[in-house]
Image 1: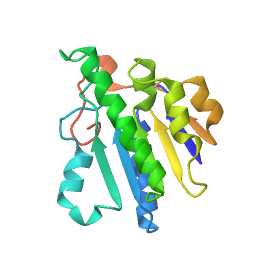
Image 2: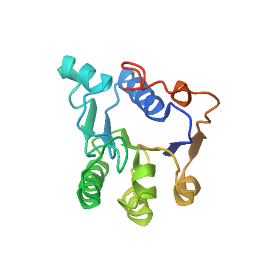
Image 3: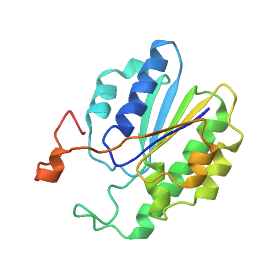
Image 4: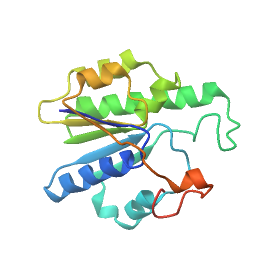
Length: 175
């Protein structure tokens, strides 16, 4: 099954992690590859650092170098592009391994919209997924090809957000 979580509203990564946690509760194995989020340590990474017994059952791999061109990013675009392409290779290997029940590609939609990776390359990677595997594609601006290929697509719609009033991201809620 291919699942897409997209839209401008908050909750795409959170929904993905929730699905992964639910699967782990049912003795499934889950892995997430993060395409944009950078080296900072978010709550989910701290959780996994404290729960090493989840290795091989619930994993998150940060492949991104941070937000591209915003929030003080000074890295060359080529660095972000190479990181995204390397992360897609790792995700492809995980999908082909058939070791995982859920493979989540977090912020892949954004990586495609920024031109870090090509939509066609992602579609090729997910083309032959195991019938028992769930692949989640998350992030704002899901390409039409992802929506068309999806078995389930959900759009998170922003109605109201504290950021619009100048409030910064809150620890433990947004990261």
